[in-house]
Length: 505
Image (cartoon, rainbow, N blue to C red; front, top):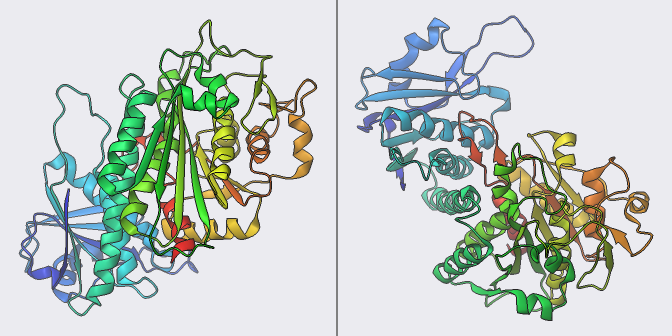
C-alpha cells in the first residue's frame, strides 16, 4: 500500500473516497438526549455537504459507525464517508486508529482502491499523533489472512492518503506519519508470519525469514540449530525440540547504534517461537489444534519489533532472541515426569509437555543475560489461564520491577494496546516447587495458571528488570471487527517498540 501525506484543503481534492471523522457532542448529563454528531474538520465546504444528513438523526457518530454519501454537493470527491469516533469527550488517537482501519475495510469489498482521510481537528489531540495513528490503522485494516485461497481476489488498498490542514507544522506531522508507516508495516510483517501454517513456517523457515529481514534492515543476525543449542546446554529448549523431525532454531538479532553510551541499558526482546504446538505427549484435543500455528506469535512480534527498531533508530542497544521449535509427540519426545536441566543449571520437573513455551523461554531469557542484557522483555502465547482471567480484550503483563513496568505502561499510552498487570509475588512460588528437582513446569493445582507460568520464568531472570507479556488471548482475532480482519493481530509490536524507544530517546 502506497501512502501519502498532503497539506491542503480536503474539499478541493478529487478523491475516490474521502473520509471525514465525526463524534457525538451530546453531553452525558441527559441520558435521554439525542446524539449530536459533529464533524471534526474546520473545512466549511465539507460541513455543508453533509449537514442535512447529520441533522436527520440517522447517524449518531458511534464508534466505527459509517455513513456514505455519493457525489456530495460542492465537493470534488466521488464519495464522502463519515465515520464515528464515539463521544466527543472521550475521543483519542486510539479511536482514530480504529476509524482509519474501518475506512480501509469499508473500501476493500467495494473495489475502492484509493482512500483519503482528513485528519480530525480536535482539542487535546495533536495532528502529529493523529497522522501516525491514522496510517497505522490503515495498514492494520488492509491485511487479510486468505493468503492461500485459490480464487483469492486482490482487494488491497493501493493508495492511502492523509490530509492535514495547510497551516500544520509540516516537519512534525511528516515525522509522525513516517513512524506510523514503519509501525504499521512492521505489525503486518508480524501478522504475515503468524498467519503461515505450520508446514509453511517451520523453525528453519522462521529463521530464514528473520535473517532476510535483518539483512534488508541492516541488523546483525545469527541463526543457530541443534549443535549450538546443545553446546550452550539449553536443556529446557532442547527438551521441547527433541520430539520433532524439524530441527530447532535459535535466532539472535542485534541492533547496535554507533552513538549509544557505553553505560546505557542493553535491552533484550525474547520471544516464544513454537511454530506448531501439538502439546507433545500431553497432546491437545483435536478441536482447535489447527490454531496452534500461531503459537509463535510472541517470537513473530519480536521479529516485527526489530524491523521497526532498525528503521526508527532509537539510541539504545537491543538484542532479540527467538527460540523456534515444534512441540511434537514421538519416540524421542520429552515426557511427563522427565527432568530437564536448563541452561541456568536449574532442574525442571516436567509435569505437562504442553507447558513448553515457558521451557524454551527459560533458556532464551538466561542466554539474553549472558549476552549482556540489563533489561528483559518476553512475549508468548503462553497460557489459556490468562485468557480465562482477562478474556480476549486485555493481554497479561507481569514484571519484577516497578520502574521497568512504568516504562511499559507509558508505552501503552502511545501504542493503544491493552495489557493488564498481574502479580508475581513470592507466595506463588510454592505452587511450582518440585519434590524431585528445583521447579515444576506447571503449578501444582489449576489455580492461577498465568501467574505460576510467570513465576516459572521469574526463576530465570533473577534480579534483572523484566517484563513478561502473555498474549494468548489477543494474538488471534476470533472474529472480524470493523477495523481488523479475523486472524492474526500482530499485538505487542507497537508496545514493545515504544518500550524500547523510551530508553533511547
